[in-house]
Image (cartoon, rainbow, N blue to C red; front, side):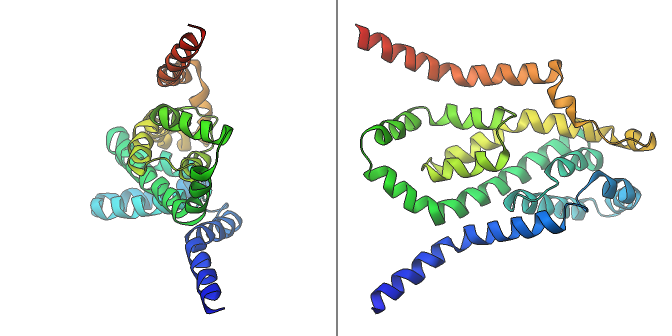
Length: 245
C-alpha cells in the first residue's frame, strides 16, 4: 500500500507544473482581461516613458518578466505586450525583447507539459505500433519543418504551438530555436505597430492589429510557410516515387 501511495504522490507531483499553469491561466483570464489592454497603455504611457528615461534597464527587466508570465500562463494581453515593446523600446530593441521573452515563456509551457503529461504520452507513443508509430516516425523525420510551420502560420494559436510539440516528444533544443526563429516575422509586425502607437493614441484610436493580414505583410509570411513546407513535400514525393518504382 505504501508503494501505491508513493506512486500516487509522484504522479500528482509530476502534474503540478501543468496544473499550476492551467489554474493561473483560468484565474488570469477572469481577472486581468480588463487591465492588459490598450486602454491601460494609453492611460499610463507618459508614466512608462518617464520611468524608461530614468531606469531603462529596470524597465527592460520588468517588461520581459511580465511578457514571460503572460506567455507561460496564456494570459490575455500578448498582443498588447508586443505592441508595448515597440512603443517603449523601438523596432530593433523591441523586437528582440518580444522574441526573447516569448521564447522563454513558450519554453516554460513546453517544459511544464513535458514534465507532466508529456512523459506519460511520450511513453505511450514509444510503445505504440501501427499508424501511431508511423505518425511518430513522420514527425521525427520532419521535426524542424513542422515546428517552423506551427510558428509561421498565423492561424495556429500560440499556446497550441507550445503544448503540442511537448506532448509528441520533440527535442527541446529544436523547439527552442524554431520558436525563436519562427516568431520573428510576426514579432516585427506587432513591434512595428507599437512604434507608431503614440500617434494612434493622440488621434483617439486603438492600434489596428489587422495589419498582420494585409497582403503586403501576410504574403511574405506565407512565402516563408511554403519554404518551410518544401522539404516535407519533397520527401513525400521521393517516397511515393520509390514505392511506384
